[in-house]
Amino acid sequence: MVELKTDTSIDAMHEAGRVVGRALTAAREAADVGVSLLELDEAARAVLRETGASSPFLGYRPSFAPVPFPAVICASVNDAIVHGIPTTYRLRDGDLVSVDCGAELGGWVGDSAISFTVGEPRPADLRLIGTAERALTAGIAAAVVGNRVGDIAHAIGTVCREAGYGIPQGFGGHGIGRRMHEDPGVPNEGRPGRGFRLRHGMAIAIEPMLIGGGRDGYHEAPDGWTLRTDDGSRAAHVEHTIAVMDAGPRILTERDPVN
Image (cartoon, rainbow, N blue to C red; front, side, top):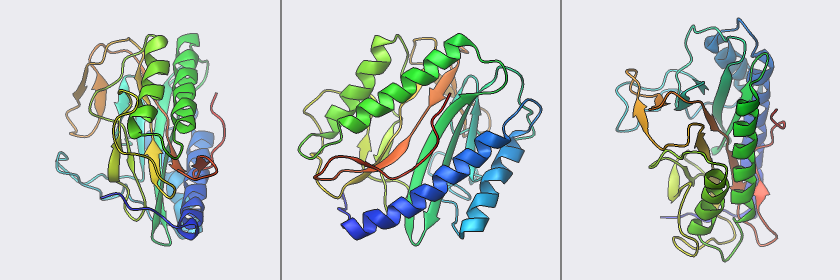
């Protein structure tokens, strides 16, 4: 069931989203050659502690997961698409990093993700990240009252495919509110004019995921969480929580621009 939020509830979600933005900024600022993924997680944890927010990621265990998620961020490096578990891995020059973070504040949840490079960037990585951001912008622009979820999916997928990138099927955005994952699902590829009709008060997380090699194949890593590209190519993942409003889509997760 899709819950429509009041304008007051959307304002409260914006406060949670601002925390997410701060946590992502902290993780990105901490990222440098030689810094471990656990240190990025700690930077985000510090923001949650300072703001009195909790993490919807920490301890989360969906049906597919062998263990509860042990961190407050997902940190996915190079060929990892999403759901990377922060480890002692130390970042290397040229790494492509995707960080996904959520925050719960006052009973409402925000969720957002960024991708960026560490050290000297590869031009191909900058193009991949830039395309992911363009796909996110296109998806948000399609999230208007009267459109359907398929219009968002089509807008995202068109940007990705025209740039020659793959899309991991079966993963995408979602409704969000009191819980991190609510109805409806928001695919990253689809037919326009199909799916749930968008109404004022809907809150959704839009999150393009791109595979640099152009193919859609991916597999689950031994940790049971991380998804990696089958061809070993690099991936990018970006996300915003937005509210569908009569006046147009409202971004609820403020964050700094990427590379």
